[in-house]
Amino acid sequence: MDEVLTVGLEKLIVFLESASPELWRILVKQSFVEGWQAVAWAVAFVLVAVFCLYNARRLGRIGKRDYDQEQTRTFSWGGLVIAIAFAIAFVVAAAGVFYNPEYHAIKEMLELLGGG
Image 1 (cartoon, one colour):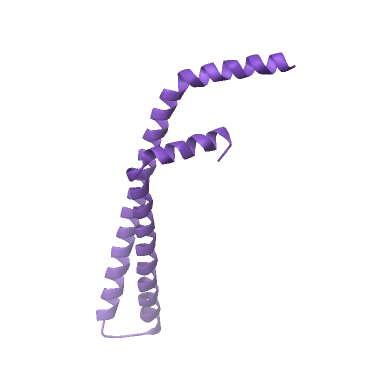
Image 2 (tube, helix red, strand yellow):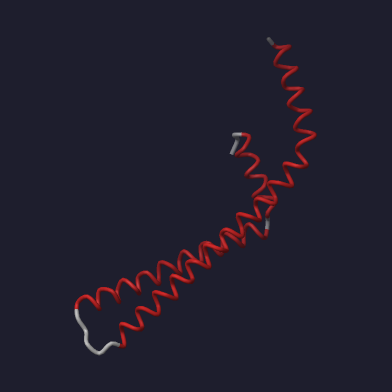
């Protein structure tokens, strides 16, 4: 049993030694992809924030005020705050990935191996 395990582990080590440079390159590249995905989400939330700001300001200029307009305006301001918070969070996440993609590649590798 031990001999079978030893042979299996030796084969695994040989495979990892040959595959690890390619795996490393792929994982670093994937880190950049995740960074750009975070940038795309940040841009989407900025667009939502712009829409909420436009809607809140437009409703603020309407002369006639009723309950539905006030409620919509309040939700627009709330949506603006939430969208800006999410946009900032995604920008910070993207900056972390772009600043140190190797860290995220190592983290991903450990998750693949089941240790992270």
